[in-house]
Length: 140
Image 1 (spheres, rainbow, N blue to C red):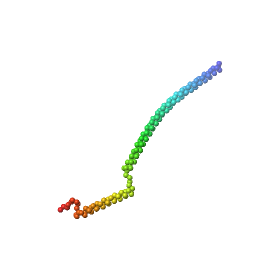
Image 2: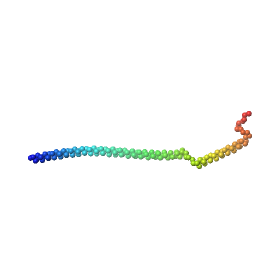
Image 3: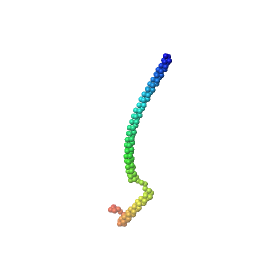
């Protein structure tokens, strides 16, 4: 009977340890299962929000690209117009040869004008016997 009591106590002790171990394992399993469910839900929500954000960013990129192409076309038109205006408005420096030719042409024109004036003056002075202005008489 003593031997049976020892065996029974060993079995009871073993059953108690196994029950405690099993309960601990079940508790750990349930805790990990809850943590995995929370992590899965969190991950699914992250994916959902990131997909939504990605879609919004794609739309923003498309709109921005469209805006950029429109602005680029406008910029190209403005730059082309600026080139036309600059060609018309900005004075280009004359070369020495161009300035010399213009100066010589102007000088030749002035010499010719002087010659014409001298010839006309010569005709007028030959006809006048006294030096006086036209229509002006001396006071006596």
